[in-house]
Image (tube, rainbow, N blue to C red; front, side, top):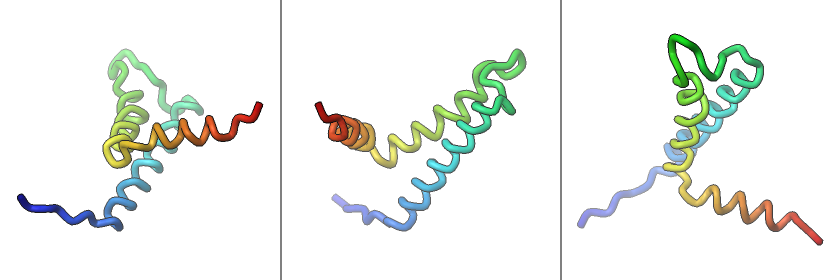
Length: 78
C-alpha cells in the first residue's frame, strides 16, 4: 500500500481560502447584499456562501468541531 505525503503548505492555503470564503459569504448574507433565498435561484446563495465552505472546512479539519466545543466548555467556570 502506498502512503501519501501531506503537503502542509497546500493544506494551510486551502484552509485559509475556506475560512475567507466563509467569512465573505457570511458578510454578504449579513449585510443582505445577497439574499439567502431568491425566486430564481432558490436556496443556492445560502448553499454556496455558507454550506460549501463549511463542508470544505469539515473535510480539511474533521476534528475542528470537537476542538471548538472543547474550547467552549473549557471557558465556562461555575
